[in-house]
Image 1 (cartoon, rainbow, N blue to C red):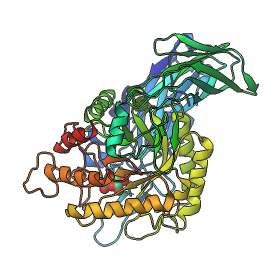
Image 2: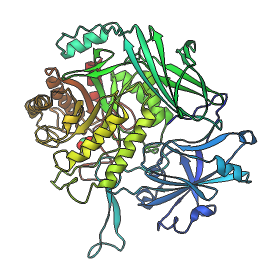
Image 3: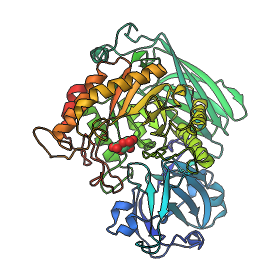
Image 4: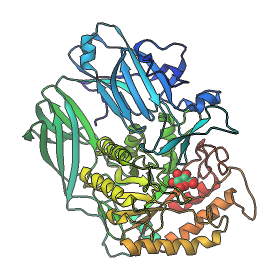
Amino acid sequence: MLYPIENKVREVKNLCGIWNFKVDVENVGIQEKWFEKPLTDTVPMAVPASYNDLFTDEKIKEHVGYVWYETDFIIPDSWEEKRIVLRFGSATHHAYVYVDGKQVVYHKGGFLPFEADITELMEKSNLENHRLTVALSNVLDWTCIPCGEVISKEGDGYPEGFHFQETYFDFYNYSGIHRPVKLYTTSKKYIEDIVIKTEVEGLQSNYSGEEMLTVEDYKALDCKELPTAESAVVKIKIQSTDTLKALMVLDEEGAVVAMETRFKVSGQDYYAEIKLDNPTLWNPGAAYLYQLRVEGEQDVYSETFGIRTIETNEKQFLINGRPFYFKGFGRHEDSDIHGKGMDEALNIRDFNLLKWIGANSFRTSHYPYSEEHMMLADREGFVVIDEVPAVGMCFWDGQSVFGGNRVNDETLKHHLDALREMYERDKNHPSVVMWSVANEAATHEEGAVPYFEKVIETMRELDDSRPITMVHTTGADGDKVSQWLDVICVNRYYAWYTDHSHIEVIGLQLEKEMRRWNEKYQKPVILSEYGADTIAGYHKLPAVAFTEEFQCDYLDEFHKVFDQLDFMIGEHVWAYCDFQTKQGLNRVDGNKKGVFTRNRQPKMAAFRLKERWK
Ligand code: BDP
């Protein structure tokens, strides 16, 4: 799915701003057809934003079910000959969208874009002002990813109608129109999709392949000259109802470095290959972005891409032929007031902090981040593990998730849809080097085997050019699905959730387990989460759990082990920042494992990591 852009053919109208908002207290709006008329008794609402933290009323914050959004828009006369599309960057989690009282799209899944072609509707309408209404539900059940359940309790001790949204993941179920809403135009015949894959020849990576990779070797590699290539082949597939005329590759200065006017055509699919001599590669920390300009008879579109290779073997993850060590974080889209609402200023602050601390990568735990975020990652040279919102598929008390009436065929269908949508959105981002198909699923259960075989096979069919991982909580001996993965990602909280505060156990337990993973699967391993809750400003000597000193000591124990294991290819600390969760006995106003506060200021561990990573 292409991002909406402006050019000489296409226009974009941003619909963000203040909309009308109403909570559907009894969840009756759809039956009562509220969409047919302007909403009554509304309050102002910001788009994009989560609505939860904008009010003082707990009933709104914790409402389970529908809320309604409404705005209006005008179609300029100059759009008369255009195709008009209404597009949502995301709406969490189920959105029914109506224009002038007619449903134009329904979308399930809170973290990926969707759109509706409203050309015909606009052509038939003689209204000047159009009403856009959205009925949005935040309900999560077992057919959804992330998974959840609405719990109702009755009888002694419970007030009538007592119910709440239960979630099985550790972040607050923020809801709302979280990402930009736009109208965009194309010509009537238009370029629908572009897939760009690159191959390189004559790769010079300054790496002999014989070095034993200790942490010092990785640092030495980082200091060598960047990898280069003699040539690259850009393989292009375009879906278009318009007849294509030419393709051009432009470099960062905007100069045309290659052009092609011949295509192989099959129906609406166009294929071409363009050769580039001495291309500048997209390297981690040294991004280089090309534009592919597609010109049709009517439409034009420019897509950004980068040239880089990815390979894995039993001990390494190679980018442009050079072993890459992941330094960075698991993160969340989360901030005060905005919740999960996209915030460009916050995005910039985040990338500046990541650069300051010496991180080179992150995982979009536990859902794909905004498109605007991914574009920054491309441009700033960050390496991204892109994760689908499959989280909450494990119970720690032994109850089964895959063996009973929880995860079901509909869950699998939605999971596969989300993989497809994530791929379609993010396939051309050079920053995306690996797909993560789930976080912490119960992969020790028999029922997880056919489920994840299908999930991983689908991801592989969608994209055979990137490695696939899945982030584990299950141990190496119990896990039953990693034979299909390329890289093993493991989350571990030794001395925190087990043997709490005894950091002296970390070394032994971690080393033993990491070796076991590598022995069993012969694949490289990333510790994709490790960390300790830490209250900013809480200090004690000797250190005790929750102090800033303890967080530093805790991370150090993990690092000693990583530095001795040559199949360990990365460390992603949990978490980048403190973030909001549901209320719980072990959550004092959220998860405090951040190396930065929720307000994006450093704790002591940030300086410790900076020293290590730089
Ligand atoms: C892991 C989850 C992550 C949690 C973290 C924690 O992947 O979402 O926030 O643990 O407990 O299980 O802090």
